[in-house]
Length: 264
Length: 304
Image (tube, rainbow over all chains, first blue to last red; front, side):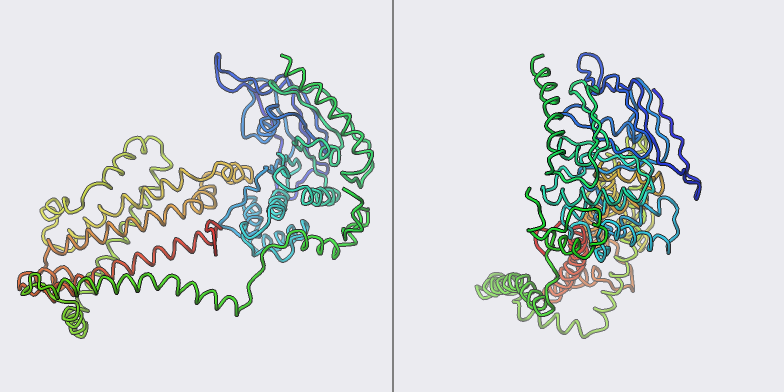
């Protein structure tokens, strides 16, 4: 029933290591009485600092609900969510503000944190550079491609200087080639930072390509049914043999879970 | 996917950071958005667009004048119904008198002050109502009700309250225009996309900053639509007011119209009507341009 946030918001007092997330017996029920839907059931999960955790499951497994709880956008019905550090979130839609330029979108995140005007300008330019969008700062979201918009959204999330980055199928709406490109990008961005990431996807290969660990959720209600460590060295490619092999095993596990659902 | 290097992808290796130019190239290749047109193309496109926008209007005016001339030529109400030629000549003559310009200035001043007040009052009411739930429950439907009220019905009230004064006219303008403006803002706030609100909250925007940096800018298109509708109401209220509240020694378009009616001077009266029509259209066009500029900025238009 509680959510603890030990954020270190005082300027300059950043923790040396990334944030962490711990869920203990978390359940979430929507609605009441006979129409109540149990979206999450007794989820216990720990994401240590700096880990890239992928959550995977069929649709309806409450993946997005889980992220909303961690983000503090919603409250659990039972159990405890504790997060240390600042949290930023990326959605499947870029959710950029159409009245601002790419740079303006990033700057607004900085402004919300109280960064001064001159520094905002400079930091936004650096962040856009980081996501390979140098020279696109003056463009409005609708002038950018889907992949570029998600890049701006990533830059905006980074601008929040978060310790924990929640990603809710951020590349789900992109074509395979652009997605592949953004995987590389994400690798590169993460390499330089102590970021703890929770990445929700229904694409098994994507999960194996990116994650240090893949957590498999069942659907209706969402439960943690299995966990796979991903001992594959970086840099990875989504089409490489080890990725495909592990993805195959995880897919089998998912199928098993889904057929059990269907049998009920 | 096959090993991509033959296809011009940079190598998926640890030295990726060293190959930024290649990466950028790949980026440009993959995600080339439509680029800026050359100045020459742009000029031609602009001319084509202006022509496409203007010719239907020009044609419509020609047709109206032709029908008008036909009716006149048919001899219907021959003594009192003026033809377009005589009316436009009359308009031209009036445009060279100080009286008409004086009248236009008076009317325009009232329009600016009245509409300005309506914008301020409407925006404040809209902002309060959209944020404060009990207030919305109390006066939300009242605002919509006021919007449907024909503003001319307010004049007896306003004249008794303020006498035959400019204040009475401004009062009715505000009553006519402010509800539309308030409603525009309320609709804008209500339809702020929830996803953007979530994103804004996660960024740390709260209360006032959420309002200032997210909800207000997101409401802009609906607010401008409200302004445009508010203007239409303001202009009608103003004309009704100037015909009903005739202030001595203060020529306005309404006063001129009413004077020419008394003198049964149909040509002059029709000329004034044309002036009123044109002024209304000009201001409406300004709002449409603002609306379109916003839509284009936001990428809400199909074509550019």
